[in-house]
Image (cartoon, rainbow, N blue to C red; front, side):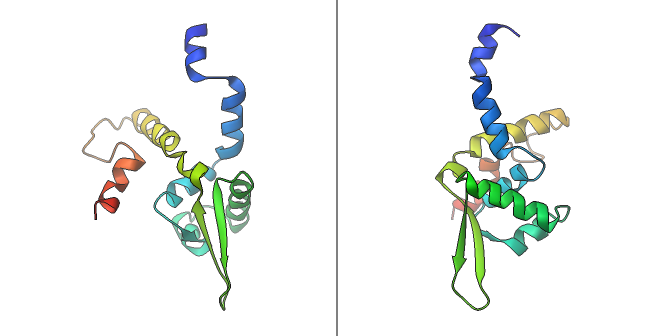
Length: 129
């Protein structure tokens, strides 16, 4: 790799910071599901059956500590808790799109009609009223 290509991707510290915050098996998947809106823990659990309660809780707490996810507690009986993306969390949509595009290419999915090419493209019908 040349110094020009290294300059193009930014600093190693910035990449390390990003991976430290959103890296891991479950965090990107959590972010993917929260792009569509607020979710309760039970909803996330259903969307991610392979994740244990402990891992899901841990990942959500870590994302909350980094101000990527907001945890909102509603004073109801029973108590209702919802998770949603913060402004910083929403700013990760292009990163998630890039991961999705890379994964599709890696898996040999070249037919654009098979699936939307990005999370944003997949959500367009949701926002078009």
